[in-house]
Image (cartoon, rainbow over all chains, first blue to last red; front, top):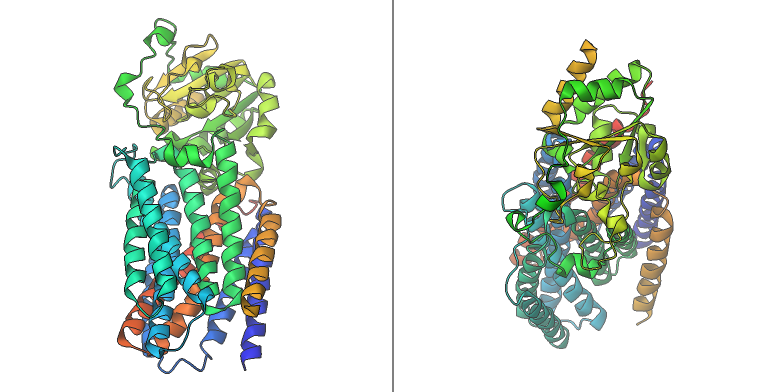
Length: 464
Length: 93
């Protein structure tokens, strides 16, 4: 019987790997996700055959509550809220690992039998990573949902506090390993790790969220893998490390796209400067040209190639459908329209792609930074919608290493013939620095809300 | 000790497989990759189910119940929302 269950687990693990592999293309990705779900269903069904299970009421109740809550969340959430949805799900995954390790520890201490060092070390890891993931994700969720302020909150002496908490959690872990018969150290560990999770994410600002979400994604996988070591279950270890690897890769990609290290994102406190203290008057004074929707519509109408650069501002004002209408109106006039997607545009990896796909924009028009950058010199007009730091030429030109975006790879929109920036005001982006692009000779500013302005452009195009 | 070595072997090899498979996913699909991978990390559900059903102690049952709820939200919510997103990436004719 055990070997049958283990064989089924092997099949499930293989389905997870195949499913993730199918994610490499939009054509096969739907099937890939279904393969993963099938693997999960198989794993759960054979687990129900486990001889240790004596009653099913609690299990069924838990499955029913969880399915209902998860289903409602998944079907109701708007695409613009996807970053906080993924953040929340990461948290539940970490929380589940923490609880499973706690239950296993409780069972082991009751039995009075001897437990191995592997068991206690793994339980400590589950509790530590699980609690950090759970509370860190809840803070990320609260920031993205706008429940708490997005700008980083910097506590005095936070590095010392974090170091002390890390040392404390390692100390309590050692206590747990030394005395596995006591249940108390586990909860002390969870408490310390919870505070650590909160404090790690509170000082991180909105535009750094892609890194945080990716990292917490990785942690939720590692917590599951640690639980696999607690339960001696290879399938958990495989599934957990797959997710751990996925989160780690995304974290690395996000950091590279900002030319910053993970440590700098986590502890650097970038974005904490108040908007009011940063100037820019000397850069903008008398050189910013504001345009009207009619003027911009005429410009776009006469273009052969237009590239749209979406940013978080597009998500905030829910402008994706208006952008789709604009793209269609231009295409019907023979204008070539493409979209330039910076890796860290938005609040999570791939955020802009999901929003534009939601609005029915074909995915082959969504171009990665490396692909589209060489085409800007041959582009007649670029339309920047709610993006700022990712198109700031300072990142490319500055040699001042103290500049928060120095060396960050950017979309070279300033190389296009004309740049139109839709933005509410000249206020700086997340990095808190002025953007000389707004004062460039070939730049026109269209001041206003993104959706309203794009709708005005569509209307003006129809009249020309 | 023997089982620990086996488990560590599986862990390290699975990490390598994960790196190989996931580096091939294009940035276009990074959000659904994340939510889909996230659903897979809800695999702790199998541990949660055993803890909730074994009735070892009241505490273990309560912890197991909560774990089942959390992990099920993760699994059901994750796979469903990924499916919703991926549907939008289908080629329009």
